[in-house]
Image (tube, rainbow, N blue to C red; front, side, top):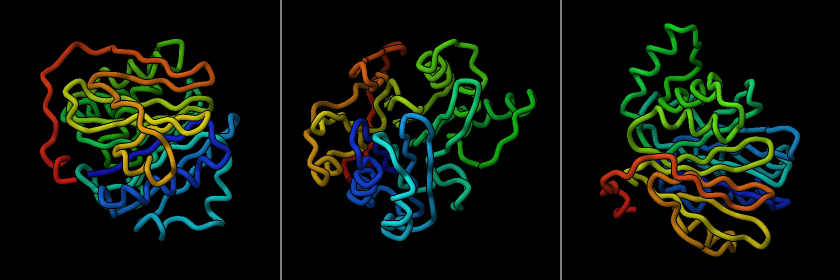
Length: 242
């Protein structure tokens, strides 16, 4: 039910994201998308269909940079159409931002109603877009704080891989409903829903992102933040099928 991947500090990040999504194709077969950053700008591409249908050598060449975030979708909230494909990429007062989401936000409808009343304009029917608006409207001064402010307001199941121009961020809900793993790739890092993605690209599994943990990967290294209160652990049973 959706697969996510993040690549940090590799010259062919988009190609590795493609391979990582290919390895996780079983998690979502409706659409695929990749966003990449060269440190200055985030570019993205997404399409309906399988990973190998959504991307080719030409489209991947248009995604330069050493950072990437990718997503394969199995729709659980929002219609199956290209506008709901991820990553969702926006520009706001906090800078460019890309988000990939595996899970379901149970309070998305309530938050969306509040945001719309306050003037927000939604472009998709995906629950993930709520996080984008919360991030853009956050009054926190730093990117990391704005991201934590946004995801602290949502409830439900989520494993997020997010990206700004200079960092990749992973976050897992306090209950641990959805998986997210951290791996090492030469001098870089990988985040993925499943370790099979790491196997395909030659990365080494390091550990799982803990329930309720936010992992910020930047040139300064890997920083772990635990902004959520402890919660009962409840992994989705479907993950055992995967």
